Image 1: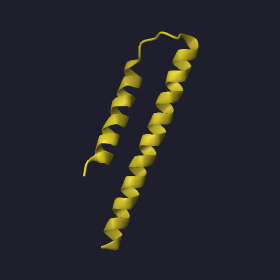
Image 2 (image 1 turned 60 degrees about the horizontal axis):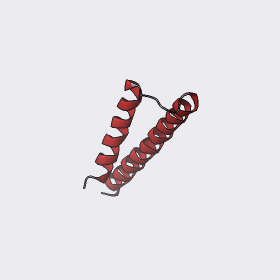
Image 3 (image 1 turned 60 degrees about the vertical axis):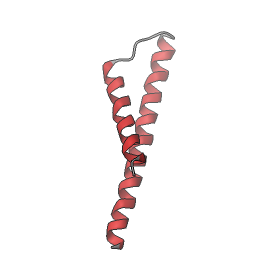
Image 4 (image 1 turned 30 degrees about the vertical axis):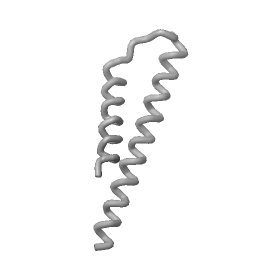
Length: 63
């Protein structure tokens, strides 16, 4: 039983870490875009990454 809860803990920590890394990457890309041009369109790749992070965040907050 403790093995299972340990797995759940690791899974939650992994998900949290993935969200943080994803947010860091997104913010970095946004800063790069803004530094080159204050008005810009979001590239599809960045939009996709944002959707992925949003999905991980929903998964983390789903009981």
